[in-house]
Image (cartoon, rainbow, N blue to C red; front, side, top):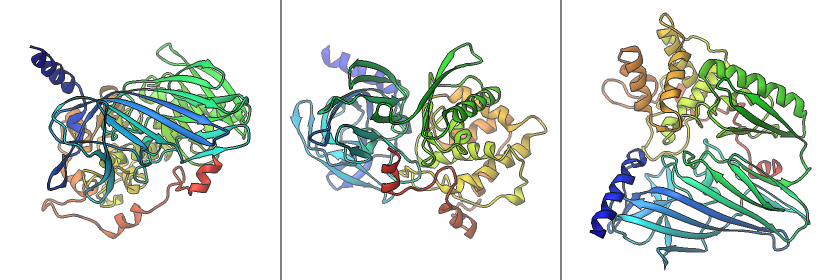
Length: 451
């Protein structure tokens, strides 16, 4: 009876998970099958020691494994200790079809529910001064393994899970401030507990720890169209008032177009560079602020399940930046921005230009009925906080407009013609490496300077 109840609970929980969005099972070697799992609950305890200049993490993960094999997760730094259900185990890295890398537990486990404990140290985007520490979880969707896995153990972007973090700073009396997009409880000086929503993925979490008073800050309340009062925090060495005025203006614009702001707060770090979106938060320049806040709807409102879906939000945000123009088909370029390996975890840079024009062409195609923004609003409402893949976006368009857009997607999104052959022309090759003004590629030193 106990086994039956456990099995029923496993089936019930798995049915509600996002494992259907996971990549195919990995054949790591002849004897090892890497299986993607469902994280259900995670807690990390981060201890910064200013005197020792260390940042140590203990993470406890509850996960469900739906088939026998070696469980896959990710963590870029090599862990100092790993255990599964109290048993010490080893982990190794494995290639994802040559386009990315993950970490897996070197044990074959039957399907079931497990407790994984991992110890590691944070060594990236962290700076220790004599009396304080600065640490941030800067992320990027344009470079591989640049989400939460740089700092803490996490699953891939398809998975959503409850995440709690405790942050403690030792070895200093200087007061610090923690900017993060979770529910923060200050337990004592330099000691916080943060609870993040269960809809968050590996790309959702904003985290910036610094000395209190080091960066000027301004707070305001935004009255949403649904009646909520949404707190807005701006911190920047530039004009906090200028950033705040622009933020409130853009929030009103986005709510008019796409409905109530999907997050419970807004955090804006006006760093002057390093544009990146998080759930209800951003690190941004002033010029990119509208682009980044749009991503709170598209990217961190409706969420790409993997890299082949990342083009959608960048194309939409770029279309908005350009003033929602129309494009005839002759203005489009053939791309395969959603035609890469199923294991790809990064966004194709063609999204900013070719992808933007493709969205503009869909607007041109359907504007006799209404603006394509009307469809995007509906798609956002129906898919909010649900990871999606490009075929689901395509089907939603076809269902909404009662028409077939297969030929358009094959040519301009998947990079295939009717024959199924790749369509990688010179236009696409150029776009793949084109820099975007809102998402510049920053060096490690430049990222440190943003702390």
